[in-house]
Amino acid sequence: MSETTFEEDLDDLKSAEDFLGYFGIDYDKRVVQVNRLHILQRFHDYLNGSASGNTPDYTEWKALLTRAYEDFVNSDARTEAVFGVFKRVQGIAKVPITAIGKARS
Image 1 (spheres, rainbow, N blue to C red):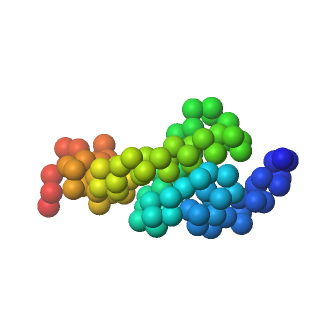
Image 2: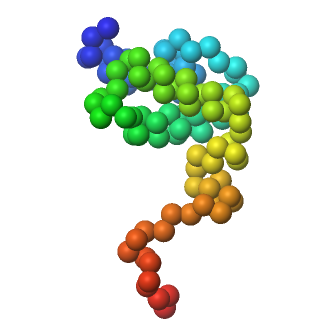
């Protein structure tokens, strides 16, 4: 598979089902239906944290998507806390370093 073809293929993928199908990952439709945005966000997070430092190739994309999907097969959105609303519920918050020590007006 050439790099150009792979990038062109990725441009055509829109949904979690599209990505899972493209990479040949078997999935439970019920899991994806309930968690599609969470799976895609977790996948995005994994891609951003890719250890290789290089642009991930097909094999790495597939492994990271499989990992993101499996996170929600064995857990749920609240537990995984991909989005800020779930992190705040768990008491996890990000405060910019510039905000530390500033008095509120």
